[in-house]
Length: 125
Image (cartoon, rainbow, N blue to C red; front, top):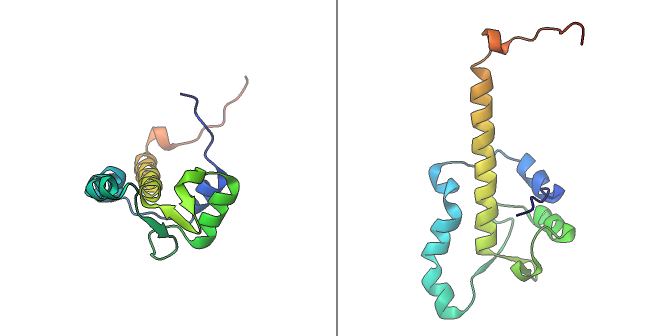
């Protein structure tokens, strides 16, 4: 699978964080997909949400930017609404990024005051 660059509109919303990264946030996509599976099968479609209605989701301006950039498949949005499973997957991505950032900070903070946490000017080549 070819790795695609992360669209700027997705990164801009990520940078607004911090995003919640509790265990339930890290499993959000599969949890909600499972909870709604029966209704999705019964109705032949899934719910869609207007974004910007809660503090832990995208704002309307962020979603508009994502749509304009083409960072969401056209099938996943319509009339200002977004497929709930797409949104939950993106929110899980943001949780994963936040958890990875927190882990990076913990790892590198632990280096401070140790030989591995010092900087030495290299001389020569």
